[in-house]
Length: 232
Image (cartoon, rainbow, N blue to C red):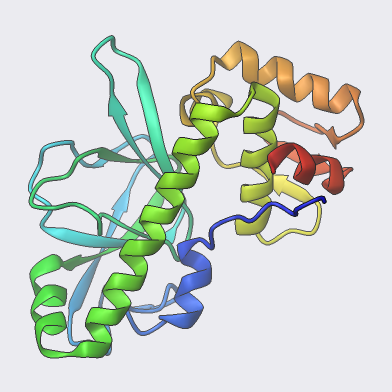
């Protein structure tokens, strides 16, 4: 029996359910206050700028307002492993305990809303609804991390890339054309592949008429069913 692949809902989807957790992504003020009582400050970062470093105190929880953010770790041999990409509406920095276990950088020029963790934590101690929302977001991040580990550990290069493209299609609102904000090196470091393997696999999927590549950042999904089967 064929089973359709299931992709964990991203934080952009969860924000519709928990939209009062942080200030809305289109909030115009330089600082904003969410209904839970925590005041956030907008911060802007240029492309490739560091937002926080591995081992630094986890003072803030962040929400992406504009642009894209990546979290990553540098392995002992110097290789980079990207843990996650965060798109507008996504929350990051939530899962850290005391210090950040990974670094965060801006993939593109971006703007984030930074809210002091202590404000949210204090509110959660007093309010069950806030505590429930924090738990839901934390479990969401855990589920996505588990899915990512499964992909890295058990799937082929083609299956990994198909999973990534279907995940991006779920997160970037476009019918069949994805404008990827990250480079192929970023994709390779996220999927545990070399950039040569990513490029070769992209070309193979194009030759098989599963996708089309109008440019290095644009991907047209020509055969969603095949991609979903590969990603399953």
